[in-house]
Length: 341
Image (cartoon, rainbow, N blue to C red; front, top):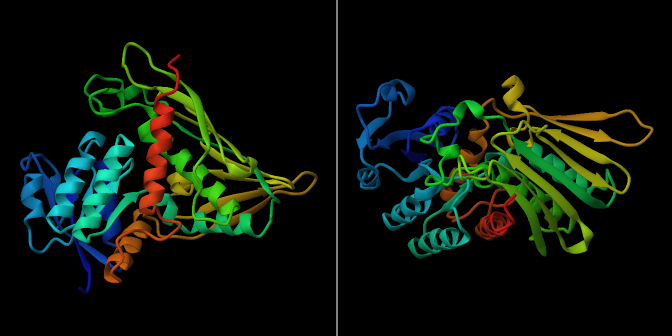
């Protein structure tokens, strides 16, 4: 296989970002997209050069499709990831992989049985910035890690409509699954690096969730994760509150600040650069800049391509391995079970 030949299930806005990334990929190329509405205006232009397939299952029967990128609404991730594995296709599914940990387990088992790749698309994990954060922690730049603060929240009032997925209970809308999965995955990654592992699972999860009657979804929420070794993480998310969206990692001798970590800050300047600020008391702030393509999704496409071409079924760290994705889903389950305010 010279290149991984991709198909896309669910050609929405994020799928368009992934398609753009494939134009820059060294390991993959887009050959087809599938949709339940082939007549939808703009598809041919947005996904130029790709065949437009009528129906998701039809895509899985295309002999020239090796891997599928699934970016449907959250509740159908598991259905199509499992169907794709059974059809012999490798799978990259948009985060969160499933709306419950049981779904993630089922997807992993389907890939294991089929001998195919399965990965959860946390694109920031494959950006050079994430590895640079790990290097700063392991080198002792800020001393022993003690606390983590991580949040992702946007004011999305303009999307407040019963049919919009972020405010739709039927489409698993709300902040925790769509936004909170990022700070949880980062906190687990940092706690793992501090302990010399790829990730760590918390020993306890406690939180609170605001669920207005109008939408019926978690519009903002916060949780505390307690990890082995004494590390405490505070994570927050929102679809109706503009948070500062800064990751802070506090150590015994200083702290790191990373703005918009989930996109390496590239949402601001479009450069693909990541920025890590090193802060210490009574010392000037230092900034480390990491470079990457201006399309963040290139990193995960090529990491998956390298894995497939070398016969591996899951991402290597800092990508999300199967156990890492399952652990993340278990924390999200616990957070979703927190008291409603």
